[in-house]
Length: 402
Image 1 (cartoon, rainbow, N blue to C red):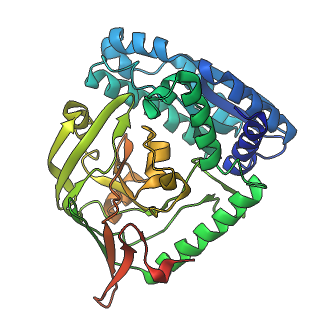
Image 2: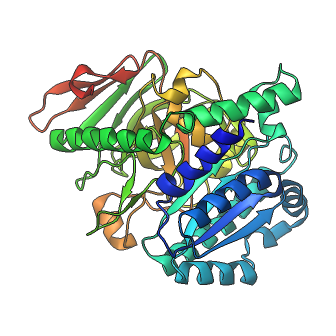
């Protein structure tokens, strides 16, 4: 691992992911294997003026033990964890989560146990948000031997880990001569595309490829995001995922029609769902099939009343830096930024009653899956009824090329 790139990665996370403010506390959730990266981030945070850096280290093996033996209590939330969310949310801490990618540790865990734990984790995130209000949060990944083995199974362990670190540095722009400027340029370009799509105000999108034939319509409050999250009534921003390459909006809960097939494996909490197709009518998934992970997919769709509806539609060019590596990373954080994708479940909105009136889906889960392919074209219907190219064979149409 190149220590200079590690330092630049940490700087990107603190100064462009979180846009950490001087005097602001930072709360980090990570795994024990991530210690070297956590230390680099803590150093960068204090250099940026952090008031304090608090780290909660977890263990994938302890998670596995709990998932196998926790039973019905898996869906319960620990009071100490709730108190931590209350404290850090109340302190307006920036929140960094370092995801752990391991395809082996949870492979013998029943799908329903995974889902119970996911609901409990979701309650903690909501508790933090309720206390913090609008506050910076960011999700990143840290290379580990287990993740490297999944991505590069034919390489020797040390070589695989080194190659994965290099890929992470590449995807997060940490290898750029000036990583912070590279992120500033990316954010500026994303804002331009967001404005282009907002100005077009398409009423329907048609996704078409060999395996997909799907119509999605944005909500009437059509808002395009991507590149960064903007604080209301302020020029402050943060980047919730590092890396990120998407431009996205919220599809209307009840207007999805057709079928859509996955284009990459979906790693859901350590369990793989692959080669699956969803069939939709009036927004709802009414049928599905999956070559692998069907029970896990079933559990996702049955989580609650909103988990079988869509909450996000996102565009990603096939020439994105992550896609250019031609690698499946087995984590949505990376794979969703190599391909157009859609999310099952929650659309980030406000008051539940108002969301329902506006067609904004609500759910305890939000799970992105990849749908973009080399042969996928997407057209948009204008308010005048005309259809225009938005994506042609996996890339932005000329009118959206910067």
